[in-house]
Length: 115
Image (cartoon, rainbow, N blue to C red):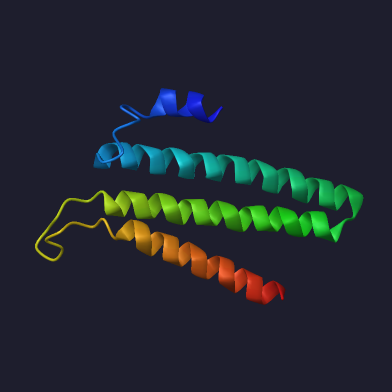
């Protein structure tokens, strides 16, 4: 499935040094994560409500937070692809790392809250 998606949506998939290819991979991964986590969220919350299981509903909410992480990753990849400007003479490539840091902090926060 992954190879098929890459073949369909990423041009020159082996040229990972190219920013456009990295952008395509990031967008594909983020979009896939958003779609499937949303579907899992809806399915698990529905099953949790029907069966009366709090743990299944909670797992559905976990998928909702995973979807949020994918949205943050998508935004980070878009921002990282901006060209260099006066304020950022070397470009915005570090935004990928900042997006990953934000996702890590959200995961840590959710873990602390659940504990």
